[in-house]
Amino acid sequence: MESGDLSPLEQDIQLPAPDGRTAYRLREGIERFLITDINNPAAANQAQSEVYIFWDITSVIASNFNHIPGGSNVLYMDGHVEFIRFPGPARSPVSRAFATLTGGTV
Image (cartoon, rainbow, N blue to C red; front, top):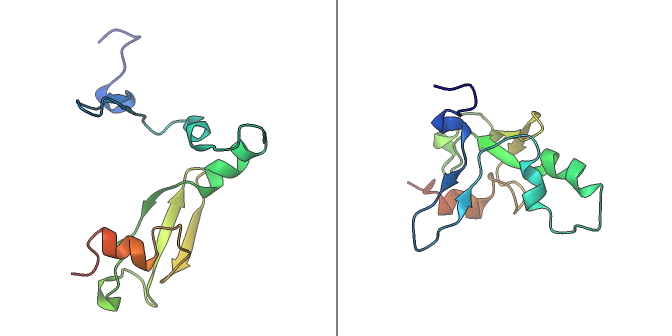
């Protein structure tokens, strides 16, 4: 492998047709693609601390949780981890809607 080549895990992925969009890998600065207000320069600093990238199993059934009382550890893009009790905020992976959507009701 040449020094300029990237391993497959370090490359963005081109999605197949009909979508054809690009799935960007997680890397420094990727959160700027999630900013909706380009006129606010402070939005980039807030974005990394608000983008969740990994979390424990979320379920509406208490026995399915990894932590008692029901809740999940959530890893954010800036590196901090936060424990969120179920049901959490509507825009988090620990919400009732998210648990139902991801099949956490089984």
